[in-house]
Length: 397
Figure 1: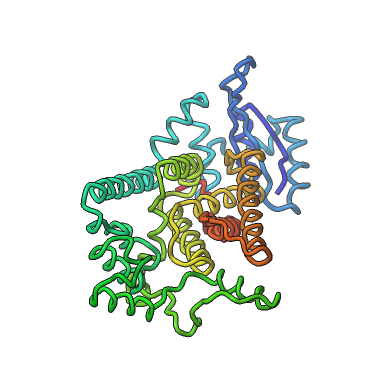
Figure 2: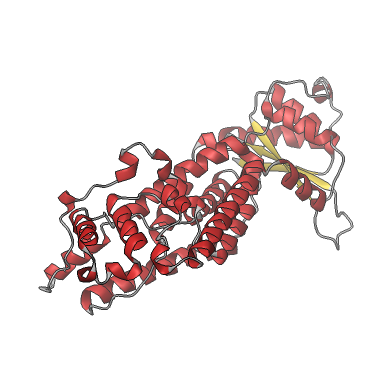
């Protein structure tokens, strides 16, 4: 694809596009508004003409030179000045040229008011779920210790998996208090039975502990006491039909800061994507990237992870892919913003490696509960989705 012409004359631009349409030259257009307040041309439009097929670019440039030399030549005048084509590109161009000139601020307000239905719903849903969990936690803290719950009902229903061992541990805490799990020898007979059942049904907590064990064996260290993989059931609740768990952890958040920063990124990135590809295709993009990132994180660390950040990383790399292959879609994400997101993912990956090596070589176990596998898988998934035609911007809907 090649940029062949930039013009501020709407009538000439329209006429030449009609001529290219008649010559069967495929093209697309882009509109830019001058946003420099110090410029005398602030608020005016410029029209950019892109030739889609590279082998047609020279032909288009040839006709453009002739047109600019004499726009009133007979061969150009024979083309009807008003576009009447079923082409989505030409219909879009006609609609844009008929609109009054508006400033950037007006464009932004229009975009936010008309294209954030799904984005607004996601922000509202995540906020309501967080408030519900916060209220349930406050109520739990006001009850006697032995009645406190391990997880709220919402959390249990939306976590990626809630295996039998989690349920047994929850029952023990409900009946005998949180200290019961650390002092099982003090439990009465029914409690000891529940604890024995808990030991018989270990939960899958990811392949990470097994990676550690493998390297410890290679270094002739005493391996960790991990249950044999053949005794574990992966995707326990999902296998029983609770398929919503593949995506539902994304609407859970650990604290108010986690929710706030995630929703800011959803607002900044999601509104742009929804304005260009619509709510339905944005939903498909979120579902695919969310499922892949959740599965990747589950396989690495087990079911205890929450947050929308895997999808946010996917949206960021999706936008970067569209900027590379379709710059006329005009996504607004600077190189510095994208580099910051990639730097964030890279730093977390480095910290994960540091904690791994400290565990293996120094036998130092550091808590590091950030779901970075979801970030990495989401970023890779979003980039490849951005290269798919299905997720490209349709100029005319």
